[in-house]
Length: 296
Image (cartoon, rainbow, N blue to C red; front, side, top):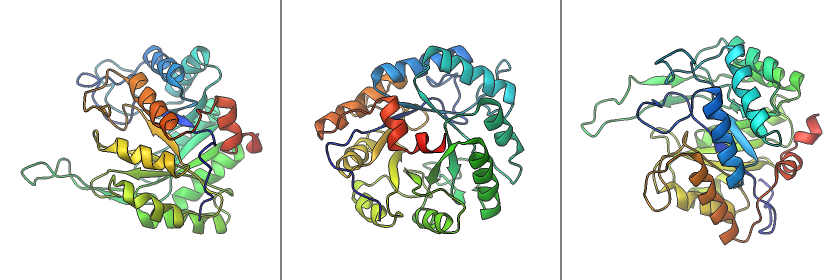
């Protein structure tokens, strides 16, 4: 089981700046390098030590689509580093299918300190209120061969993986992957909770999930949803986990009001951390806590 971090241990705040497919014409998601840099600065000023970075197509009217162009990765990450040189960059690698050349090329170009590593597959489903599919049912496929390829690339580049787990079996698989030598020890785990076909955003699940983690695992919650995710974040902080939010995960503040951007969401995380008695980690503290210094 994961080690409990005491209530006085500093909590690492991560901001998920933009996400995958959200339409910038409808929601306050940054797309361009300038917008991403400003969003990162807002997050840093609110207490974030890490920014999780997705890459968007930079062509006109296509900012709702992902990009795996190394030039796009370089322009966005360079802008963030110039605006906030102290922040830890956590780059996405989540891609459908078996071809991981795009994500690996982006890792090679920008050399982030961390990167997300999807640690298992999930039938990604959602229904509308009339019980029709919100999108055609799809498989977010992350077989072991794909995980191994991404993990080897990260190890070669000195990038610390952040294992994203959408379901309980994936949480348990992280321990198996660690024992098999695929993942470094101890692993960093993100519990993705609130996807309709994955783990629910229920705070009472957290103690049981922590019991299933490998010894020494560092962990955080990624709460997908509306104002209900904030009880999840509070319980995570009480149990010693780290905290993440941003417009990739939710558009709603604890009050139920819609956020104007990333800054207020990170500010809400910081309030929760302080209310449960935990200080906010600096970027340098985050590097030590999550094993980043060990990989450099």
